[in-house]
Image (cartoon, rainbow, N blue to C red; front, side, top):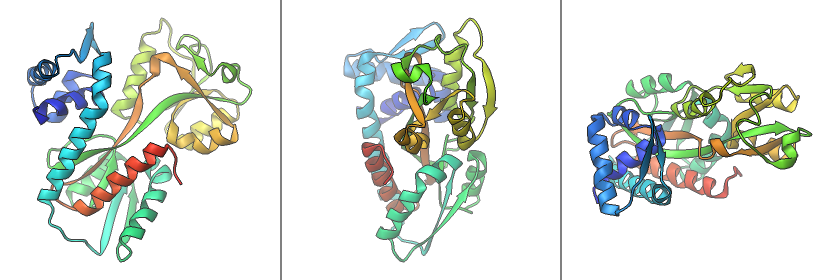
Length: 297
């Protein structure tokens, strides 16, 4: 089985289109199509359905996806080990977006310190574009970002955070726990916007409505969005990791929306090729363990 075919399959699912996957992989759209067709022949299964200009993963594709992601991650980890220089530095400089810095790294840094007690860890929190430039100039050693834009980086899927609708305590939808996109089109909406490609999939769901949603507040900060919902200013789509404490205390209630099922906020771990293999291996293993438990301890 060709690893490039599996890579194309995983990237199409991640970015939501053949064209975007082609851009990120630095190949042509026909080449991506050919790789998927080859993979479908190998698996004797159709992986995607075309619905006009949109694509939708088939049930067979959904069944194969977790295995494809695991195959790709194992391959990338093996490649990194072969390319590794094998040295442990005295300091590790980590770059991170705000959400990962707030909700994931406190646990990861403690775990890293236990494993590498003689290493000092320096954290820089910044937007994705700034982190990419810092990594290119070697001001940081690795970064947690929303997208990969340069082939000189080695990139690893790190965190898959489901995006769900959250309402406040006492809201009518809190009792049912589920709704359709039409049920919420007239609800006052707090729209958190992080600017990632993953978030654009949520935009596309709203574009299918006859009338736009009633966006009362448009914010770019998770804490602001959560507090507005808790204070009953509206309801909001949020990544699950940021809401754990509020859900446990009953301040926020998740509501399942069929049309947005499967949409998640994805974070990649990137580094310059062949560097910091030991740290990356530890981070990937720890991240996978945390996601398996779906909680930060």
